[in-house]
Length: 151
Image 1 (cartoon, helix red, strand yellow):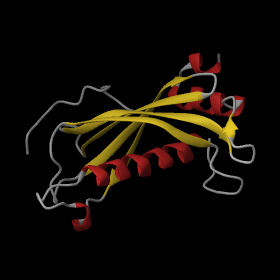
Image 2 (tube, one colour; image 1 turned 180 degrees about the vertical axis):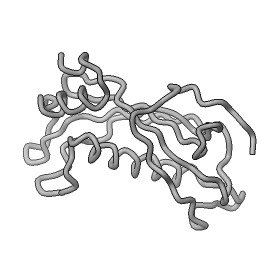
Image 3 (cartoon, helix red, strand yellow; image 1 turned 90 degrees about the vertical axis):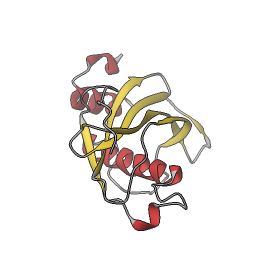
């Protein structure tokens, strides 16, 4: 396995362990890019629960929609690799939230992929964007120890 030091950022406030499944492999015998995006989504929803901005229920819709995903693939993930995904809130805007992530080895020594996801707070009943709720700001600020999210 190639080693690439984690640097995006050095530490995350939340890590989600990932079990690499045989079904995640493609014809090149490494984890397919679609599976990596599923790893990120699984970690992101785990992060939402951990921070308290989502309780795991789906009544009335989730409360956010994906606006943008950017991912850089750095090193192939192999079947026996031990993997985790680090997630952190990088920015909270008026209606959007930007999350940085890194898919890395369980020991944090190898970065496999990294990027960011922009989510938009969304009112599913009205089918339109909404302001980021104040309680989300407060929970994220406390979890990330970043008072800038309260503004």
